[in-house]
Length: 583
Image 1 (cartoon, helix red, strand yellow):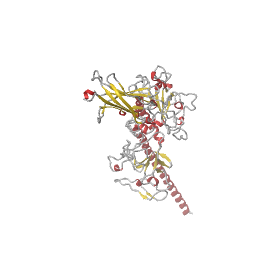
Image 2 (tube, helix red, strand yellow):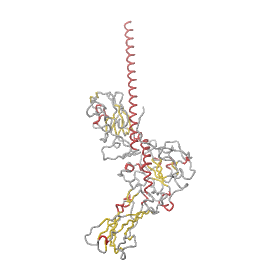
Image 3 (cartoon, helix red, strand yellow):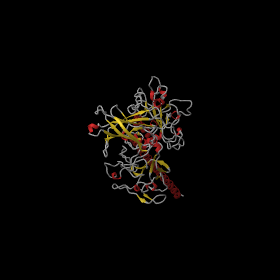
């Protein structure tokens, strides 16, 4: 009995020691997991901040994420943590901590963090451009959930056992050469070459990766704030200069004119063609080639002065309804041959104010030559004047002074040729995806989540008295007050950047439902817009509900507070500061 008692005491003591050891191991594992979660979250925040800072600068692919650390930098102390310039996607490698402005982050095993970036979110080569906006998601999958990036704590080196989607592999951690992801990640996360499918856990006992997902929804709030700032700094000033008195006669010098809006419809299928009498909707980023046409067949060339004469001419379509040519004979003034003769041609084009247009002076030419067989044409320096009409059409007149026949030593008469292409009415750089300054805007399709509104009195129909008044302008944040003449209620044009769908679940976009893009007063087809809910109108069912609209003022009275200095609480502005991620 004594021996049995001693044995019972021994068993209980051993059980206590074993249980205590297991609890301690569990506590240590919990501490390790919490530490990893902390550094993984630091890396996630740094990636979001890096994308936002670059998006707010002059990056041609705003929203892109960096590639992983360049493999050649693995054993280079001076360049460890520096991202590769381009990478084959999906890309797996070590976290580019130095590029992100971080300290070297390591997991509980002392290993640097690893990082995966999705196709469409980093540059695969130096010539590729990306398309990133509020409706774009990641092409990575973590346990079936979408991701734009993953951050991974690789843990201690293990001998991976085969089975359960795991290939047998004995991990080692070399300090030189090119890193092999199989020495750091396990099972589905260690496929080589990398695929788009990753997991948080695996039944295999040797799996020890700890993975944190970066979803598109995590990146978008910071990215949209950066895009709002960039729209305010780059796109709004450009919109103010498209239709001004310096570009088009017929527009008063006191105020710019703005194009008509596109009736709101599915942004994925819209033709983006502005329509007369439409003042709110999508921004008219249509192509001139699909909408602009000659209003009628241009007339014959005429003189611009009372000197000299046009003896004869003929006009024809060099290309049907596209290129018009007039060619003829001119003669100098009979009384004073030294007097110059100018010749001009006028063509009128429709639907100009239904989009964003520019004049391409290379699309008209004036030439002259001596009258005779085989004489070469001489290109002349030509000028033009474009006149905006109340129906949104533009009359373009171009001309040049002809060479003096006597001074050139020519015969008594000479020949002229005037040529104009329909493409003289060109797309504005704001529409061109390859434009070095503005191409990021339409190439990334931010116009698909953008609402455009213009005061009726600032469109072509009101050319005679361009400029809205206190009761006819758009209104912005009316709760700030509308007294004292020019104020927040005198907005001539604005943009609203809609964030991702706030539905639960989020609506599938693109679609034609305005409320799936913009909130409350910004989606009621009225003239009042808000940066955030300020007015508690009775017709707003839930004024305190979710809100992610961002307003960009295009044209406002000079008496308003500065918009880009951050002095007004309703206008968000960010600066490209160096990122510091705190624990």
